[in-house]
Image (cartoon, rainbow, N blue to C red; front, side, top):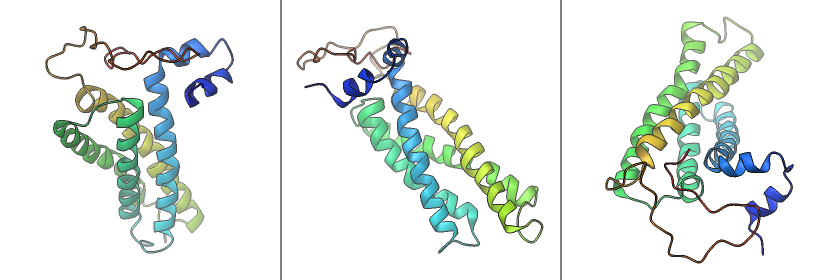
Length: 189
């Protein structure tokens, strides 16, 4: 029986399939990030219009923390397929703390340096500015930082293995035949 990935790849045009297989880690990272972006947006909007109405930066920070925890679990188990190590969790927390700050900076600039908030602008313009600065610009900048930092520090190869050295041979059964190639070592782009 084909895996969900193989079934999804079967629906992709033939000319795109090799590209997606070759860059599967990036594709998985982007899929996880897209889902977490939607989750973060929903939580942010809910918080901004209920309990944190006058604290948009706190609402975005809480929403980003929730999305980050979900992102960690999905990236670790699916996109980067890493075994949990204590160092990995610590590095993830550190990278995520910096990424959350990176995510918040555009909203802080928009709200408090450019004064794109009530009473200086109308409510609709404030919400558009908040969404564009916090959710679009902030998330994009944090995504670039996270991808680079996770590959570099969080889900990096174990200390005894150099990036040029191949991964040890898997001890599990060979993959089922289909469209998806077996998982490549983590250090191959």
